[in-house]
Figure 1 (cartoon, helix red, strand yellow):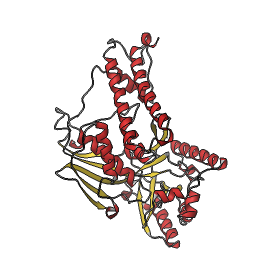
Figure 2 (tube, rainbow, N blue to C red; figure 1 turned 120 degrees about the vertical axis):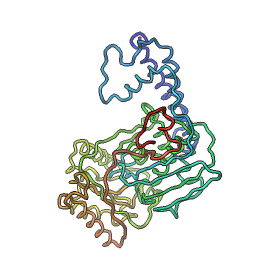
Figure 3 (tube, rainbow, N blue to C red; figure 1 turned 45 degrees about the vertical axis):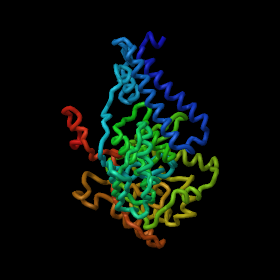
Figure 4 (tube, rainbow, N blue to C red; figure 1 turned 90 degrees about the horizontal axis):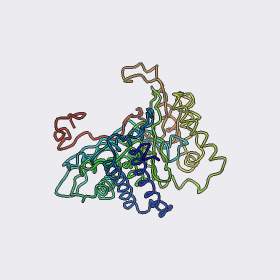
Length: 436
């Protein structure tokens, strides 16, 4: 029936089914141990996505020229992104070899991220306008040169998350890893609950893909997200690091999926970053093995309330929206005694909301009133300075020293800022952004 109505719809459905069923069988066979064999999982996820695209291309060659997804006069709505991409894939007559030329050098800018945002434990996060740069280039020996925040604590061997991410990219491309030099310039506070490890993973994957001359499918598979979330274990940091903005990510039983949540205009981030590091393992050890129905119900309501407030641009509802029962009270009691006094101080000074960023120790406040570049705007029209001072005083009262940063949510995630040879040079006349 489908073939008679729209043969190319069969193509899209078949490719999607192939990826979903094969990956579903793999996850089922691994049950809860899918993350125990990360390299195998990464390679498998990428291979399944690639085979799905190839299957689509091969079947589309057999379709008559008039075939089209959404035939019969169907009008695709603006939000139906995956159907639109399935339409394009189904009509392709050959496999496109896109930029498969290996590169010699690539520089990736990658942002900090703030996970959980209160109740969105392991599923909600935002992209912070604070960036590190990673340059990877072909060399005659393996070398890592690190500078900036946390450089003295970064591993200089293949356990560095940049190298871990790059290895996963070359495995996805099915190519051997050459000798490379890694230059890391970090401005993201290291191990402070601002996604420094996720930033390294994402930067490594993107650098590896560019150097290998390999591209991954996105629509309907989000292969890059699969690799990054498989390494990290959850999408709340890697999704905003890849796509920017505020991201809500879940696992649908077959793969990781994520959607962007609107960022209210004029919203700023005020973060207090303590002078000490916080280990995620220690922060997770503070959590009990079970949660009560009351705690689960509390968080379900709060995360729904938070997402609705963000979608409506209603900043007055953020205070209740970021409340949490699953991790913040436990971590505040066991590790961060300054957390709730600082939340109280920030909201009293005018913050719309305040929460523990990721696993801590950073505390993040959300403020409003920004318009354009804040350095051209009167301070009285905003409350970020008052909130920053209140957070710092609350920390000092508990004997905690640290720095306060004022920034905003970045709308775009990690990006290539330099590549040799450039894509423009090899594009046949097309000039890409910034001459890349």
